[in-house]
Image 1 (cartoon, helix red, strand yellow):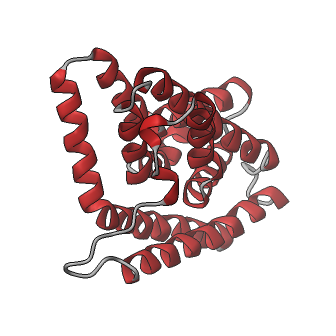
Image 2 (cartoon, rainbow, N blue to C red):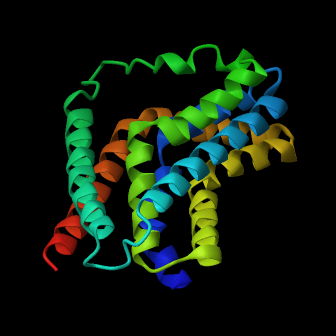
Length: 225
């Protein structure tokens, strides 16, 4: 059951991990005067937000491993709606992409990240993971997959923890590289940030469309049982 649960939630976890803006944000925070402290706090907030969101969905959908249960029907309809929403977000993101010669406007939350307070770094990590609409949809889908795979009690807790770790691997990786120190680490993180900034639209659109189609297909398949 545990291996099935981990396999079922893996695509959503990787989609959360590959989201460009949190990685850009953590690199900007790490480059600040209090980069080490704020980077750790951002990572703590990120992990906490994901863990709370995934746990709440898993609790609400308890019993969804029974295909005939109300929870299972709710989970399947939720997937249909979530998959459709992800596809719409992907199309909308592509439609509003910067044209040739235009420069994308950075989100407001990125302003002054290099001198963010400890509280702001912690809160921003939690909001970007647990309250971000795209991540919330992906987290809910992952949690539903874990419950439907039949994970209970310790298995459920382990599967949720694995989801959180995989979804946090890029943020934790950036913090780990920074803590390793040295000019090479700084240069590497800046190169990653530049790559993400340049390609953020393409990466986001691909992730949204592929995951949206997968989640929508799973929901329709479940309703057709």
